[in-house]
Length: 187
Image (cartoon, rainbow, N blue to C red; front, side, top):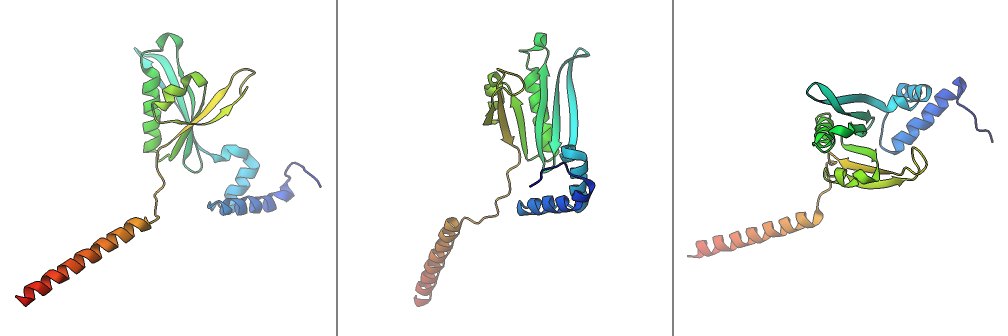
């Protein structure tokens, strides 16, 4: 057994392996994408990386960034408000802005890694807790992983029970209508 860094002679076979795995999961990426992914790393998955600021009287009081990945998922990064500007609603405005921006850009799910004391803040926007990272960026600093679905996957499954009930109701209406017509003809 040998584990080694990918070399040029391994690229095609590894790209095929990746594409096969992605296909299993329902994704169909081209060979060129897989090769680019292997040679340039995970930054290939990032489709957009944007930062925004919020100003008060021409002074920056806060910032927020959004990193968009393949698959129309995004991560909020660096939602920051200056200490002296906190409590004025700037964090709320930045969060509302980034959620709306994500929706306009057809992001289906957005996540954030945040400190525990901001959990209730993000829950107000519909984020739910997905995980916990202990000693993440430094010893003693725990983080939460939270996310919010912005776009529900279209459910194309048919509710069979509902369909059967509707069909039974149609049959009852047909039967009732037929009975009424028969009575009218007999008169």
